[in-house]
Length: 210
Image (cartoon, rainbow, N blue to C red):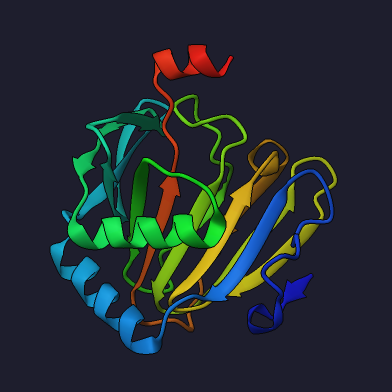
């Protein structure tokens, strides 16, 4: 099912079951989004993403960066990253995402897709470092791209277009029951920057949270 993102009420759950996804649409003006896009493109410490798959070290064309309250370590695709301290603009965007969603985040994984050839395969964000069933806030800048969800058991699918300056929240059991992806496309020639604000949980915090 394809959803027209500009018409979606932000309090509606886009998933039919087993999770919660809310799309807030554009939460800033075009001018604000453009200013943040330029700042993120030029000031973030971008690096090619790394993965170790079947013992082979792979570098992706897509670039990433990792920021947070503390120098958290975060492991995915068998590679561990250490968070950098927030920039002024990232803190502003974190506060905006928290204000809109009512959630709290302590870190952010950023992705830079140079064009539509670069995407992300089906996956779920359920690494052991993340707060279980915690919210993930996705802010998008630049090129508008299709974003898809697929149920892990029934394979039901839902897609929407993530707009420039828009906010998407995934929470509750979404990561347990659903996969998501950014499919590649030949029609997009411009870059997209995606910020995914998350909650990293340390060993001590896991104990307190039970």
